[in-house]
Image (tube, rainbow, N blue to C red; front, side, top):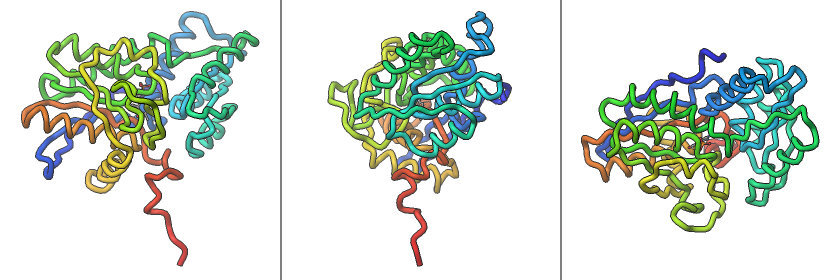
Length: 304
Ligand SMILES: Cc1ncc(COP(=O)(O)O)c(C=O)c1O
């Protein structure tokens, strides 16, 4: 599976009605269906190289789902036990996949505070030396890996100098790493964060409930400080869901809600930047993680 990670294609999406084209990198085509395969594989391979893993080691991480699925897969393939701490609000599809892969799943009541899970993972690791923490929210490898790989792929695949790069953030690793790679080559490029309008913390507002799973977990992650940000674009949950459905039905791209949010932000950025601008965004994960969420609400089969 490792050879299938990364080098994902970038596709141009032509929005005739809006009169713009945006370029979307298909991270949902990674083997476990999300961008998180990149960090999960690099952190475990790096730990092995440094001699930090023993056969009895247990990978322990707090995640909203995609990192858990990726780590559970990497752990299964490499023969390590995996324990995943996940908020009870995460979609059941993600929980099922993690357990299906043989990982242990511990759910916590977050009440909007992701820190609860991070604190739990730290105290579990302090009490048992077998635990190895990838620490996706603070590990600089998360940023470095995106700078060295995802970011360089974007530079190779974009149809010209990148004018705008916009994506959401969970840990901030993608935005920081890709942002650094793009800024180093094109200092005039604008690096923008997509934020749920209901939880626009970068814009100085309070976190509140939104339906864009996988991003904006109610706090500003430390890795985001490394992102060369020029601004943010707010996208409402309603607009994110509407754009995700368009990606499914007009473009045939079966992606998750945050991908719709990213593309909605990219379309707006492209309208502002003018017809020739090269605007790049990411399609982070697959639609099948969202069957039980609002995204699939209207297409639920009804009883005859
Ligand atoms: C579902 C999903 N996972 C992961 C990410 C990126 O997360 P991170 O900031 O942790 O690199 C995004 C970003 O938009 C996302 O939508």
